[in-house]
Length: 134
Image (cartoon, rainbow, N blue to C red; front, side, top):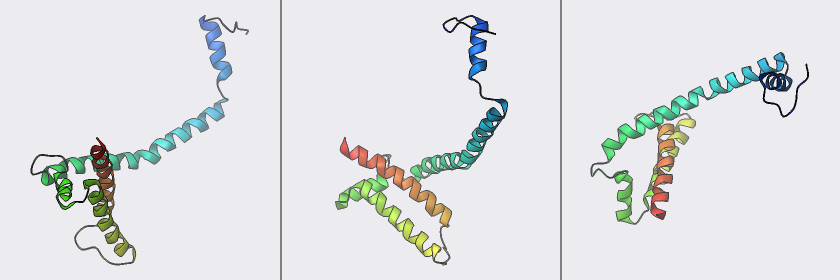
């Protein structure tokens, strides 16, 4: 079957599409890899959803005045930028994890909770730093 390169009839389009497709085995391998990528990131995406839910629910506990991140912004009354204070809180969590990594038991908050808190605080610190530049 021949085709006309610039033609938009269904036969010419079908020919160009068929000519551009890789062999079936390559297509199956490609689709398998794409499926594996989706499965590989499924847990990560679930964690992002969990972090968002945790952030939103904890926000109500810490924002007595109603201002976003009021608990972290209070550090500014002491001369410490809020974004820096958020990173200091990350450092506290890191110290807990270092202790845990050396074989100690964490009594009040598990390693996973500390890791999630670090992720949340790191993201909040970006928001606070960018807000300070406005």
